[in-house]
Image 1: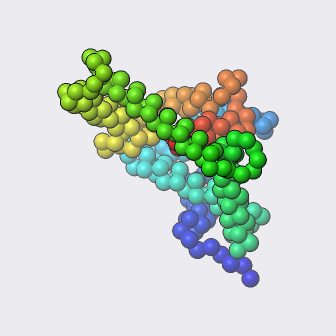
Image 2: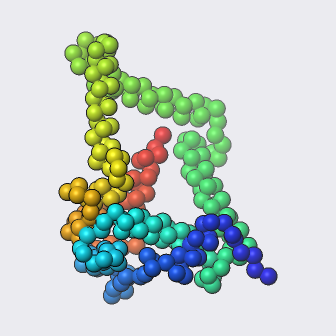
Image 3: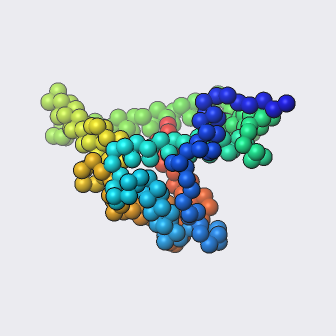
Length: 249
């Protein structure tokens, strides 16, 4: 007898796969199935996605259509997770498949632990000695000290070797101003960041031209080697680099 996972993740994904009009498939990006995606193919897929989201076909995505697009994005994300767990593709997740997914996640965690251990184990003897631990701690302390020195140098505007109260206040004011600019660009004042980036004229709607301009910029960013085509893993590689920078210690 099959055991079905009843968590929201899977039920929502299954419903989305079966019935959500938001997940209506446009043309696959790799239309000629040659294993790579050209900019023309990428643009065609992006246009199809825009037209699918533009429910009233007026050439703009209004607030309600943008909200639906966000919901579709979440549904697609859940669907991908579901598909990864549904190893045999029968539309259901068995207990064995859930255990396999758990095993795969545990394996990835162990890989990360092994990578961290390898960074500590500088003499590659398979053991992390107290000296190696201390060396790693010292290296981190040095980096923190370097960051403090750089910050102090930026704050010490008159270069007298000390940071006065006035210089501290000036630095705080500058940081607040930068944070305000950052929040406004990301749309933290009434609009979600992703849509704020698309809505370049800030009229509350996303035109087809704005959407396609963003798609072109995304293709160029994903095309790591600049050869005009995306091959398997190229976009993921760039995303991974951003993620690693974000969590770098």
